Length: 121
Image (tube, rainbow, N blue to C red; front, side, top):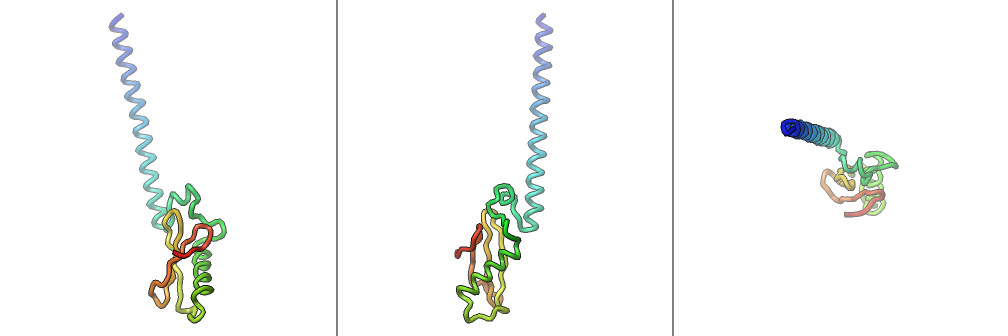
């Protein structure tokens, strides 16, 4: 009788070890997939938290729309004496928000933020 309970206990220990190993492997796969996807998205200037939590996504347009909004904002408020061909805007994603960097003749002159609307930084 004691031998059977010892065998059952060993069998249960092996079963628990296999179950734990299965969860460890699944966790490792999820972590690797998360970092792989995040690296792929980062190479396209997109962050995974922004996609998951919709904090800096733009339902009203893409990157070009945001940079245009930033450029329009700058020109309306500060560009009265500026040649529009000398000004350009670049979008930078920080995950929780976008920034629009305004360059005049290649020099950074203003940073604007975007999280649904344009604001000055």
